[in-house]
Length: 424
Image (tube, rainbow, N blue to C red; front, side):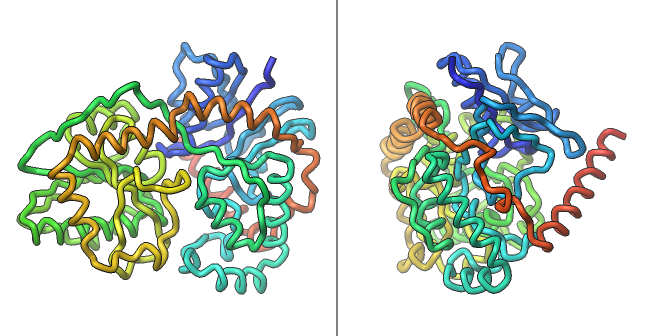
């Protein structure tokens, strides 16, 4: 009998990590007869995806109570520095832990927690190392030691080569024989869409939360699309699907153009979003799981990368199927400059000429690299060889700096107050 696998990611809005974890929990339970559970808020995204017919246990999490992970269970967490582990988790020393790095900067300590990596450091590793050594030397060493411990004990899974390169570059460490486990989703046996909605207007969608690292590429993309529409007289309708803390920044973009229209849509459920894409969208521009969701339906996908600061030069757009090393979005650097400034024009022109084959290429790439049937089998093989118990992680790795303690205390008070307001 396989040990129970517990997926921890308490989060309310729709997001890629929650979708991945709950999707995998359901499949492992039904296909491998593995007991699984998700640890989430009662109204969290994973909780909302569970059906009465699912045999997945829901272990409720809140900001003012404790939740237990017992000996013999396997706890799967999103990659993170160890001292950020939620204090509401009571993990047995005999529980196995696995960290899945699902963002390139998961294990890079933030110089100042409240603003994370929005200091223009995502393309300046040398400056980051200089600041971190001066301001948080102990946290930097802890992260290096922790990542290397996870890797030695086969308890670190990386979603792509970008995650590996970023970790090694910023922490200046080497991870020998890294284990890759790409993001996974259910990919149908054949595409559900192979044609355009209209031949006179191109409907394009952005899918994703409007977070600090996504908003700048979205703004840049809108401006580039307006430019394309005006220089080619191609009618473009751009659907922004998703909300988030940085959506107010879209007010700085002037979408007025005779050949471009911007449509704003709030967050959608998975089924609602799929129906919307199938019925109204010709092309998706996204990163992460959102890019895969669209490709799995048979839609062509332009894969976007991310930045924590405004994009000053022209960015080079590319098809999802041209990604390397399972890349689903990486920090934008000068290597991503579009020297000719014509990449978006060229992709849209190619789409006009050969829509069906380009859409098929996005679908086949997704099915070949991210099909959950394959990834779930790889997951089971990897967790079987992972051998780090929670009790074997040195206690000093969980110690926080005084800046982190103050920040976490403030965050806890804010979250507790928000929960109290909801209950009232």
